Length: 239
Image 1 (spheres, rainbow, N blue to C red):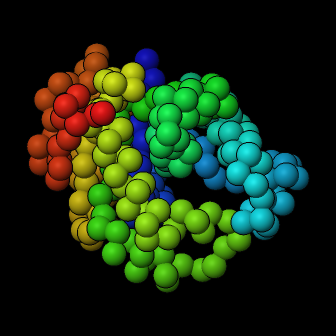
Image 2: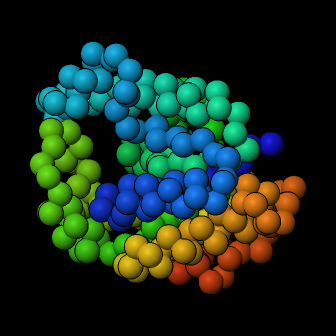
Image 3: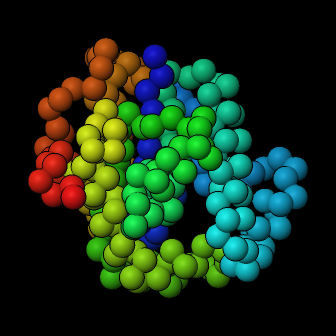
């Protein structure tokens, strides 16, 4: 059975950097895995996707929603076709929930995401890169300019996204997402430390790593060493 591990976090938290380093480390260890980056532009001939990458800030919300849904379906199909025992993802369905959150009716918004991305699996494990928003803003300021997604880089939006990720983790059972296990990583660390911890988590989860013990299902015991803020499923705070 395939295990799906996804990296999540606000913009600027270092997901892409860690993902690239994690891929290289896993390949070096001979780990068989498929990569899944559902929000990245398509690499095949997709004229609308190409146009969006250059003019996305001018597109209405409904069109942007359709572009990202098409991307997700395309990348999911490619990853699943590999039939690898492990899928490593940069972002996941949780990204879509946070990005398209409906504050007036969260359940309605989540249903909409599931309809658009019906083929997207829910991660078995999420490695959340926790980073103070102020530091994320500093990192984003040093990035090269791009023509889309700038709304999600604003200070208030970063605070909102971080709060929504934590709410999804804390209230997982309420949203029918209780099977996903969250691991909290301190993204202020040096990339080498972060990579070491991420690899240790990946290899502790099953037979994907040569020499690692095989486990039939995720353990209920948290990796306390990496949980900088373990959020339990507590419905008292999920109104």
